[in-house]
Image (cartoon, rainbow, N blue to C red; front, top):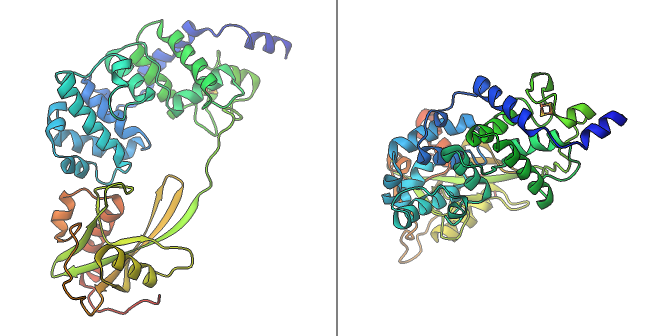
Length: 380
Ligand code: SF4
């Protein structure tokens, strides 16, 4: 133990570790579309999409988005709705708005050329320390640390730090270690190597130290603490919520409402609906939604689809009901400006979330759901 304590207080052998890390990365990295390019715009698209979203989910969106907006200029010139539509289903729509705003700023202030300097990158909308570091190092091979959750976990274990990795002091130590790694060159490989090692080998619950190129240097492994670190890993308890949405039809058109300015998911089109309040049934909830959004009561009928969705810490069960607008029609009533009858094809070209996309698929694929017309009202 004495020998181990002495060893853990020695300077970390950054040069040896970074060499092993780079060799491992070259041999074992996954072949991902954004690793086949040096185009900073394409790398940036991947970095924005990968925030909060898994690689497997991102790949088809990444390809479609680049087919639609192949260059920074094409993105900068696009209408906000077109950008949101291309992002539809990926979630966290603020990322798309900020990215679009940043592309426009680069067109205006940097003649369309993405800045290489971290401080300049940090002035762009939506670009924080992580994105600036990732872009500078991956796209431009600049020695700028980028600590995502995977990289931070690897580094905390390498140093066997018993402190919360989110604290400013620990972040500074981890960034200093990455800069030490980058002094050996190839910042792009260092950044991606740390992230890839965290994703494939140094995983949160059961790191595979026997396959790790840094096992000889890793202080957590030497001390047998790899599963206990990082400390302070807190996960917010999952919250179960119920939501109800109304499928209202006029011929083949569906009634859609648009999320208002300032609302979560602003600008997205969706079926009229909401989270149900405590002890509120779907009937009461949808009548409330009808009054609030349409100035008419919504009378829900039978269930057309039930789907589950997890958004951050919320596990949501969404029920879609065949529905009709209540009678009588209030005098002078017309559809509000942020509500429209739209065909399914039109909705697919407008910004919408993944729940809406899934309900549209159910309506398209299920003859029972697409034929549903006869109303059997549900209980409040
Ligand atoms: S030796 Fe184990 S704990 Fe240490 S970095 Fe490698 S996988 Fe992670």
